[in-house]
Image (cartoon, rainbow, N blue to C red):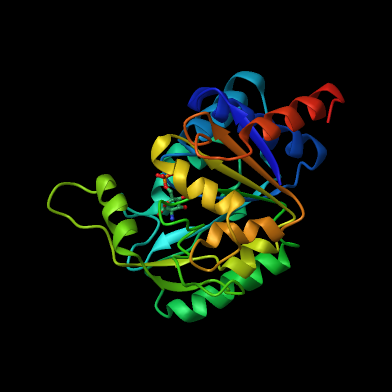
Length: 259
Ligand code: GLP
């Protein structure tokens, strides 16, 4: 795991965008896995800026959304598909046919999940998967107790997750209790993973995910077994890491060597 600790959220967003840009330069037909949540908003803003002001092209990119609420289609303004579209996709030059979304209103959600898995395989797999981390340590909607070999499926959301998601809903409307998510096993098949975490309320769970045991109680901890993961944290999110100084030192060495 490459742990990159930066000063604040702005730097985190720029650093993550740099990473995407580098991958895109090496592979213009990048298969990019997109996550939702507040954390990637700055990254998405920066990618939109790079496209608009610096001509960064995404026209051969294919995207795959990580999650959706069960019962919501991508056109629903509260859906995660809508969020990703509003914050990123509609500002880029990715052809409509290359934007793959989970549809929580699919007639047969189980079949839809299998179809999505096939779609990823047919595309040749995800090259770079973007991830945030929930306060329960989830990646996607893989809540504590998820099988570490799970595939794309419907998942009952944890109470904490429902509560955290409620902030995106208008007063009086509660966040959905179930979601569709790429499985832990599906995520692990991505060639490379970029996990972002910002702010002090993620510090404790980040330390469990990075320095704790691999456990289905913190599904992000499985990333310890993946060969190519970069974690970008701001100082606040990194504040509970025991080996923080070592990570900083190691990163400085890598940078010196131009890695
Ligand atoms: C949500 C999403 C995740 C996201 C996480 C953290 O429930 N399913 O994809 O990473 O929670 O969200 P935030 O970045 O807003 O803290």
